[in-house]
Image (cartoon, rainbow, N blue to C red; front, side, top):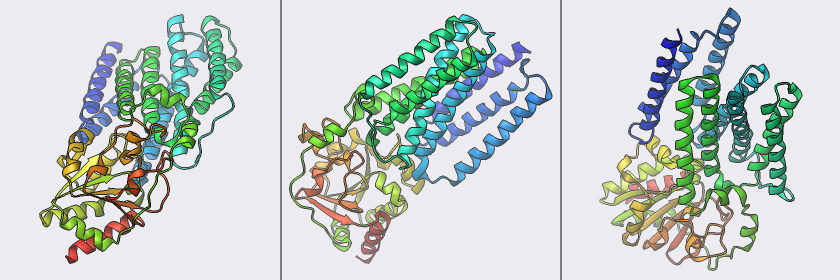
Length: 456
């Protein structure tokens, strides 16, 4: 039976890899999710044939887990709006880390594993548990349940002390075959606390990078537990997720012109207090005048951000773009790598609205076009178009590559009020001579623009 099961697990892992590969492109992402789903279903079903799974009670537990997980996943997936998808991903990623930790706890409590397997279980427990509690805090921050950065006195020393304590207990469990369940409990509790204290000082603007890192950690933890269970599917899938998550974390940090270490271990609070205030005044414009400006432009570039997601304005934006194109205006969409609150957030929202993929251009493709653009429409974006990233060395976002919207002939900014962006930094773009402010709810403002363009 073992010789039959392992090749099936290997085939399942290959299907999962193909699914992940197809998720790299918007055109094939849906197909990739389907591949991965079928692969996961095959892995679950083949588990019933494992020789270790004996007895009716074990089968009942597995079936109950499948039914509960399917119901929760299906119902939440249908109900959760696209704007809340980053929170959902953070939460589900945490569940993966928690599952890896649970596997480690059960194996360690059995006291039957050898030294190497026990070491791998402990590594998986450390990584998975930190990812679990850290992802819960990331969820709370994205859901606005935790609205401020929390920095404890001597915060990094606190983290180091907790880590050392957890490692010492891990060493005790590794080298002793007679450790108590209480020791194991304290070991896991320290790791839960470390995940919390590790995440609470990280600012909201850096949260997409943190989510990506926790995704990589969960994959790595799953890979370690695959070795513990001698499960090829878990080993391969976990390694692939860990590697891809690590690469994505590095790419996103590079897009912000920061090191991963500076994002994870430095609070923005001190830098924010030193950031220079912008000069000049905000200049409002009526929607009807803005519509005329866009309708008589040769080229319009739309820069979306999280505010567009909050306002659910992506469908109206695409309607506006189609109306402008009908009048002979070239319309493109500029997507910053860290726009929104997770990688690809804006791409998914605009694709949902029906915007063709070839109109979504990333920073490297679009930046050279801004100086020859008549009008830029910024909706909900802030930090990714802030010229302070290039001009103000005291700004916490200094050095981050931005979309050069300020170089366009005219810039229209849709904004609910005069508040700061996600990182809490003043935006000097808003007070530039070529910028005009369109105040109000994003969807309502865009609807006014649509009606005004229709009347021209």
